[in-house]
Length: 165
Length: 268
Image (cartoon, rainbow over all chains, first blue to last red):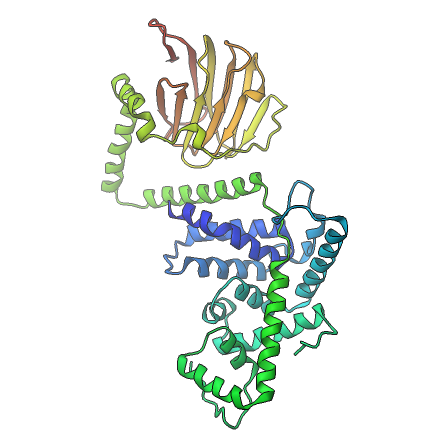
């Protein structure tokens, strides 16, 4: 069945994108599931199913499917939900890494929803045209919005850095 | 999209610089912009800053730990999607003209004929090649019920529910029942324990480790099209479920046949 193959190929990356977008793993899992169900129900016959999935998932997230009330709970994940990543770090390294991640998540959460979505889709390797299609804007605007998002995020991550725009 | 600016006299804007860095420009556009950058320290400096910002931000984003989706949650999502696909298939089937439905009915009758002994014997002979992958190759299943309780409850995937009795028994009972909900459940009726159950992605494996006369009650959702019963390396029974009216219960006696082989016997 095509949707099963689609699920195997794209569910993990879609979930990852949605965790970053919404800041909440439960919400991300719900939206990812709903996205694939929409695929089944709409049978879109898309030449670019990956772009379609991300677009629909983004719209679902933007529509506020439980996003607002459950934001930024990544640090409260249950111990059973082991994060993806390398071997455990030393306590100091772990602390530093946690602090860095908190900074990134806070900076990301402070971005406007559309800027955040555009930035994350770009990080997932989508072209400006695909991002524009998902965001409902023009390819030229994607460049402008990306630059704005980069500027804002960099300012929050390293306020004293000389690489600031 | 062409860039219609005179790059010799105007500074480049952020959108142009980002599109250049992301290789989103045509060759001609990229040449024009690079030509401008070679002669404009201000724009070149902004290009370098943007590039550094991209590297910093994308590195930071990739560093965000993503909580791994539990095996159970992933399986639930997969099952929900497959149920949606099955439901859609069913809706499309009933939306088709009567002639097509009649043809599908003939196919269903052929499937039912597989319950006939000679046909079943042929299936048993061909089991490994036509029906399913060996159990060892199946990914581990998950149950959301506690294995310490006497009942295991779970959501099966697909339209075929496979029960694999991994260890032949001297005797025992297997009672199958359909239920209106979307969940399946397995229960030890007497002797043994629920630890004998392993939930597979497409059904249930039963290991009779502690007794030879254990009985089991297995309930499946009404949406299941077939129950495939597989015993050790022995016989396969395919039970069609489509069109059954609830309540539906089937009693199967487990035990040795007259020839000393392990077998099953359907009760009326």
